[in-house]
Length: 128
Image 1 (spheres, rainbow, N blue to C red):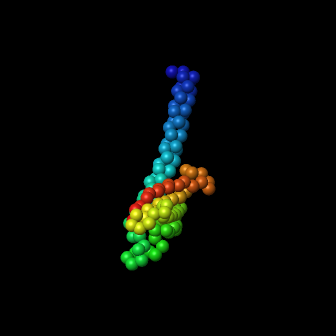
Image 2 (cartoon, rainbow, N blue to C red):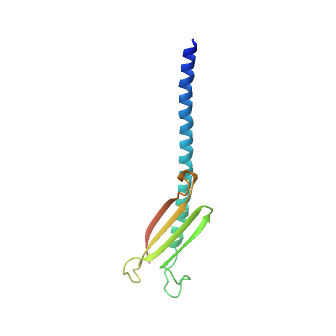
Image 3 (cartoon, one colour):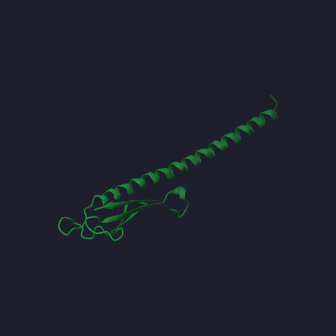
């Protein structure tokens, strides 16, 4: 084997190893983004279920006098913000009132770049 053959073989191996390192970095970024999205989806689903299970205000049995019309936000964990809106849908009246529930979860991750954020938005309808 000559010196030229060895240099060509080393160059081919170097190119192959560099491409593998690039794929590992890209894969890690994908895992970070997917983990944040899974966590945000879980927080959105949790709040959506909580809001769907509240009672309508009928003046006697419901502890929340503002429901079904309400909104708010919280921070379930550092770097994650969750906001929600519950609004009556259309001109519906009891006992057929209909509400639209929207939950938005925003989070930042290293993969989204500086100052960048990502969102998960879930929406459902709820009848009285």
